[in-house]
Every structure is written in structure tokens, then in C-alpha cells.
Length: 165
Length: 401
Image (cartoon, rainbow over all chains, first blue to last red):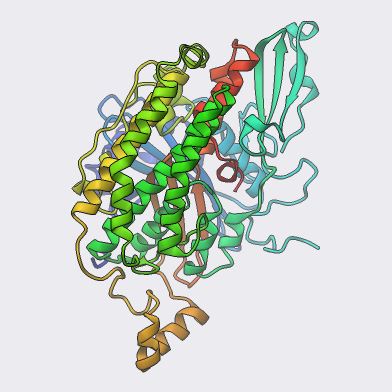
């Protein structure tokens, strides 16, 4: 099974229900798309992430009604530094899509999706705790894994694996 | 970990309610889960779970290890189903590499994975019943679990932290006589399940503690991210083994138990039926086990056999290189989800083209299911919280990572 090259041309990927739905709603929010190893990734403009999630959730043809996972990746030292990653699943159609939003390293802030899926609550707290990404509109944005008085965000790449001694 | 915020309690009912701490060392919280209960008499007003007591930073540690060195770390996440963790991680890296796995390795993975599911469900059934006051079931369940742990020891040398699945196949060939022993276990196990059901399914005390308790509607279950038997107990028909087959599950016939009642008893029924379906899959895997190698033909990724290392120069070189420098993985990212005993377990692995993963994120099913607990218990009695915790089957190692 040799690896097929990734497809990054939006025109070729239009048939995927998630991309079709977002393009049909507002084509300007899709920054880029990539189909690699049977998985579709959409880069969404960070200001529209909550609306894009709501649009995908309420799609009548293929509702992406289940938030599987929400996490982040730190691309330190390059900018934009953070990528917040959303994995969505459509339970009726068994389709998956990955949404990503890029954030600057200086003030990583993005809108919370807890109003779309209450399930995002703990995931966003975890990303806040371990990466220091802030979610506006989150009902209870506090540390979840580390103690309250902890300094720093351990999953950032400039945080040493052994911790500060 | 967060402190319970003082302000959050100051609500209209403040003069009527009391804040009670449960855990982290409470025997029915299955580990170190701490629940802060706001109660009005015996009735739950609100629940705040507090987690993080077992946080060991496994995701951070993974970034400092070679790809093959991450496998033993994955055992320790959800310590009741080590093989499922191994499988999800190995499948993710194999997908990144584009590696083809030989059929025998795939069938062995299905076989061991289903034994792991039975093992995990037996621990759940025993402890859940014990929380509700039925002591005998626990002893019966651990009797059968012991057999399964012996199988794990036979193939991998370890009872719990097996690390048996490796990137590209299996660590070792199964030993002689292994399949016969599993076969004799699989033949008698349905009788054991009848035994457990005889103790619980019609038991009036058990029914009173579970029927109609901790109800969850399918809409709430999806919105709050419930997964696995917790979701199927609410009537949502999804099982990744059937809907997104991996490692050869498309070759097996099995039913997905779904119950629409949404209460503790519905989740119990789903899991007990899964025990029967799993043993059916084990029987099919034993009957159709193909012959052939158990490792992929990829010398740069898969460690060579010890015998070859002593006779062939290339094998020795590859062994040395894999151990000292690891192997590079083409840049990219994958999200591989498998159906663990608790639900969807997803591994999100990002590669930057080096020999160490750039980021490994585990989507734990217990982490997802824990969020449902608060909704389930609102307005119920304190004793029902114990039943509800048992019914969502959380493993704290999986939550805290």
C-alpha cells in the first residue's frame, strides 16, 4: 500500500459533504483544504470557527453532529504558532472531517464551541491548561489537569520535557 | 485540577444546599475521581468532577520518544484494555507509513482485541455489581478474567502491560498450544455469562437499583459526547468495528447490541450482550486463523527476528539502526479511531518527518463519558451516583493521561 499523494485542490474535493456544505455557506472562510491518507482537513478562518461548526452540525444531508475530539498542535517557533484541531463525526452517515484554525503565538484566542456541542467543555479546558489557548465564551475556563497554581503550559514546545527545575 | 469556585455555589438555593466531597479515595469512584456534589437533602443539585490526580504527561513524553518507544506508554493509558491502546497507536503509525500488515497479524489482533474487551467488561461487571451490593459476581468475573490474563502472559510475557502489538505486526508468534487453550475458554465462556446473568438480570434488588436510574436521552448523549456502550444504551446505533472497519473486522459477523431505555440497566444489557458477541468473534477468529508471517515485510521499520540477527549481517544492521536512531515517518497527520470497550478511542498522531512523533494526542473514551455524568445524576439521589459512575465505566488512567 504505497502512499497516495495528498490532494490540496479545493475544486477536486468539492464532492465531500463537509467541504460542499461550508463552501455553500460562505466560501471565504475556507483557507485551504487537504485530502491525505483518506482524511479530509479544512483550514477555517479562526473568527468563523463556531459558525462553521454550527453549520456543519445542522447540515440536513450529512449532519456532523458529534464532536470526537478537540486538541491543539504547537508549531513553535514558526508563526502562526498554534493550530486548534477539531475532529467531527457524522453519526448517521459515518463521515469524518477535521477542521483546523491557526492562531498567533502572541495572543492565542479563539471562540469556544461549547454552545454548539456541550462536549467541548472539558476538551477546551484541557487545551487551555496544556497549551494556553484561550476560548472566549467558555463557561468555566480553568485548569483541568494541572494544579491551579501551576506556571506555564506543559504541552508547548518551549516547555522542557523534564519541566522547570 | 480546579478548586471548587466559591462563586459557583452562590446561587438562589444556596441556603438550602450543601457541598459534599466524594473521593478521590472513595472505593466506588474506580480510581482517583473526585466528585464535588451540591446536594439538597439527599437530592443531587449539581456535580462537578475533578480530575488530574493521575496526570503524568504521557502526551508530552511521547514527543521525546522514538515511534516504537511510544508503544509501552500506550499500555498505561487505559490500563484495563492495553491491547486496544496498542492497536489504535500502531494503526495510526502504520497509516502514516502506508504499511501493509499480513493477514495472520490482523486476525491475531482481532482475537486479542476481543479478549481484551471481555477482560475489561469483566472488571466492569464485577465492580459495578459490587458497588450495588452483589459481592459474588465480582468473584465469578475475576475467575474468568484470570484465564484471559494467562493468555496475555502466554503471548507477551506480561499479564497487564502487554505491548504485544508493534508497529508492523506482532511482537512474537503465539506459542504452541495457545489456540487450543483459547478455544476451550471460548467454548465454556457463554455458560459463565449465563451464570452472571442468572445472578443479576432478573435480580429484583439489582433491577431496583438500575431500572430507570440515571436516564440519558439520545440527543443529550450525542451533544455531551457520550461514546461506546454509554451511547448505545441510549439508542444510538454506532460501533466503529462495523461502521469503519479496521484491522480486518470486515471479515467478521457480529451484532451491535443497542438498547433504547437510556438507563443504567440499558448500559448493563449492552455490555453483557457485547460479552457474548465478543466471544463469537473470538470463535470466528480461531476457526479462520490464516497461516503466514506475523510481521510486515519492512526491514527498516520492523525489528528482525533474534535468530536472523545471529546469522545475517543486514538483520544486525537494521536492528542496530532501529534501536539507536528509530525510523523516519513521512510528514503528515492521521486520526485513527478504534472501538475500545469504553467507546471510541482515537489517536491523533502528527509527524514532521523525523523519527519522533511531533504530537500524539489520545482521545480517551472515559474522558468523553465523564462529561455525561453530571447530566445523568441531576435530580437523583446520592446512591444513584454510585450506580451511574459504574454504568459509564470510567478508567481514570484514560481520563488523566
